[in-house]
Picture (tube, rainbow, N blue to C red):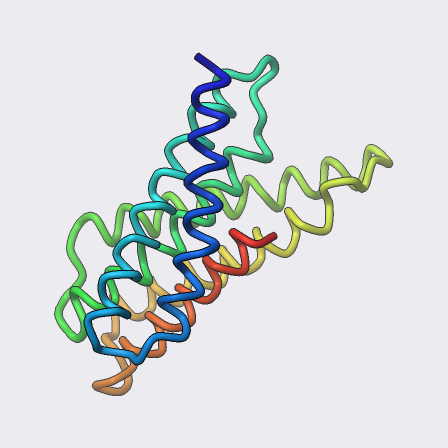
Length: 172
């Protein structure tokens, strides 16, 4: 069973890497971009689900895989949601995802500090970077939820930034 989830995770990751390039370079707003973007989104959702399953089934639990999976999912989820809600008020699911990311960012930074102080340093950099980025984005989202977007097309910048960020996290 564990092998199945690992192979599914790898296949979804490779699919996301390949189709993400199509979405990235396809003309924006056209069918190819929209369809390949949806395939990329769902491949990344599958990556997040399988990384969660694999991390929780590991003995001991693989916290690194768990938190990086949540971080990647947050980027893809908020990037996709930016196209859905645009300038409308965020829904409960948006606020819940942001709260989960904020908690995950704190966990990532704590794990980075723990790794650093124990002289390992192996995971410090990636956890520190992803935790910092995730925390800043979650706080920025909370501010947008409270104050609204500054510009009518700011949703587009959020979409592009989050999708590109998710692609970088996938590649990493």
